[in-house]
Amino acid sequence: MSLCLNLPNPDGSTEEYRLAGTPIGRPSTPPQFNRIAYAAAHVVSDPKNDMDPWGLPAIDWDATIAFRRHLWSLGFKIAEAMDTSQRGMGLNWAGAQELIRRSLDESRNIAGADLACGAGTDHLAASDARSIDDVIRAYETQIEFVEKNGGRAIMMASRALARVASSADDYAKVYGRILSQAKDKVVLHWLGEMFDPNLAGYWGSSEFEPALASVLRIINENKDKVEGIKISLLDNAKEVQLRNQLPEGVLCFTGDDFNYAELIEGDGERYSHALLGIFDAVAPSASKALASLAAGDAATFRSVIEPTVPLSRKIFEAPTQYYKAGVVFLAWLNGHQSHFSLPAGLQSARGVNHYAEIFRLADKANVLDKPELATARMKHFMGVFGIG
Image (tube, rainbow, N blue to C red; front, side):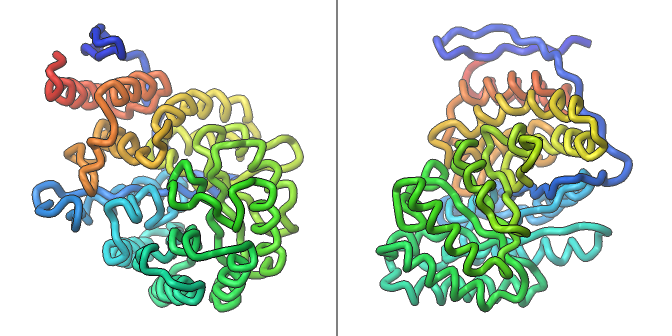
């Protein structure tokens, strides 16, 4: 049966769109990968109980945890309570604590389930930070919580540190202190200002080369406590430059939602592992692609994952920090939640033409897992905007 609907164009016209994609099949058991693959997972809001969506948004914990089971079933590790969960943009530290506790508890019930948890300083408002010591105490609070609950930490970039640090030495002091105290190896987090403008000048410089030297100094001085570093600059050449200079045993995790396919495959000598928000939205495709790569079938890896790249670039287009809207939109279209709403009401951060193009690109990338459901929901969504 042919599925079709009317979608808008940027010039104000509408046209009929006919779906042509084929859903990706699910594996019977979680596949094995030869790359470490973290999916940064979103949270599901609870609009029926959302009395203060901007100040204290309600979370549907059952649907949120069910989505994590979906990711684990496809072979992924989970990067929990990270930017994709709207950390600092709708999910505060109290909500992140609840999320971390629930996800760690659930992981103990599922064979092979693994996750690492974001630990930052977001309970300390950047404007309230007065010194480097304030930032150190904030990091200690969150990493202590993660470790007390049996988790491993991803040391998130800190808005407060970006505000109070005056040099690369300040970053070295903070990271050195925290890493020296960490129970387990930690993943560091280099999040570019396109994801969060408050992180401009991170590592002590607004220029890439001095920032790279700063973070490499930190890693080399603490390499026994660093599992790896996630870099999200949306620039594959900069990631390769970092990757090529990491010390032995320290991993590079791509957070580049524009160029992840080539970075994960590698250049024949080195490759990146993955810690990606887009894997939330394209999980079946990414799972099949990574399993194929592990089996030595690079051609299938490319044929499955490369069509998802234009979709990802659309979802993560500027202003990039609103990419969560596209991620949750696809979760709704694919039946992982019953509504299209986000904590803090951020579904309104994108316009109808953006969502229409996501729908087209998701179909072309074979990412619409249930085409009939997706089409029905998209028709209702278009109707809200007077398009039918």
